[in-house]
Length: 323
Image (cartoon, rainbow, N blue to C red; front, top):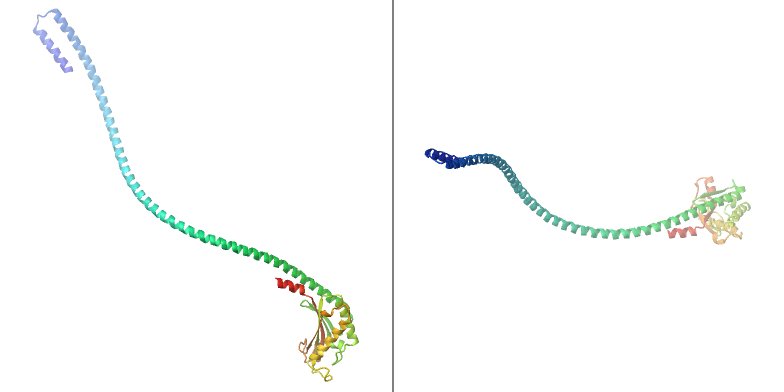
């Protein structure tokens, strides 16, 4: 544009010089045109500078945009690469998930089957446990009941034992006058044993009770009359010497021991306070010695009457059978 204006200006000057004889009006017009052209040239020059400045600015902006574009492109390429890698990872994970899901379904089904089986076993065991608990409760109830019966039985036995101890003490007092005359009183195994040697009761080969011996037996009978719940076993014992009495009356020691026991029972029977149902006579002969028959002292101890006093244990036996 500026170059074209310069060409027009030069053409006008040449035309002016070539026509020296132009009119003032023409000159003036030319001069005005020149001024306008000059003004236009200045304006165009200013515009050109503005355009040049705008161009430079645009070039700078273009450079910045190009740089930004390159940066965005690099970021896009990186994102594309990351996307591709992520996509591949996703596919791998999806494949693994599918495999896991399949395995999980299989495992879940297997576990469910096992759980059903375990639940069935647990239900069976619960039923068995309930039955066992019921049985245990019954056993516990029976145990408590039996424990109570045992306590009652022990209390009853202790009472019987105390009663027999008291009976022994009573007999000891009643028979105190016969101490040292072959009479002993002993408590063992829940029973009271009154042992009387033959020297207190009988003559050799006889079953008739002497006067002194009868006093002792009568005193025992008085105590027995006060204790109607006592069973009385009278045992006759001899040494091992052969019986040498009258033939036909006594056959042997066994027969003699029985007659002597019966003689004691007869004396007890004279006491109306003694129930004959509580009395039992037994002959043991020489077959239950308490000492050696090789000495006279031993034989004297073996020749005896034993009165065995036993508490009636009907209630205790009944309780034992119920246990």
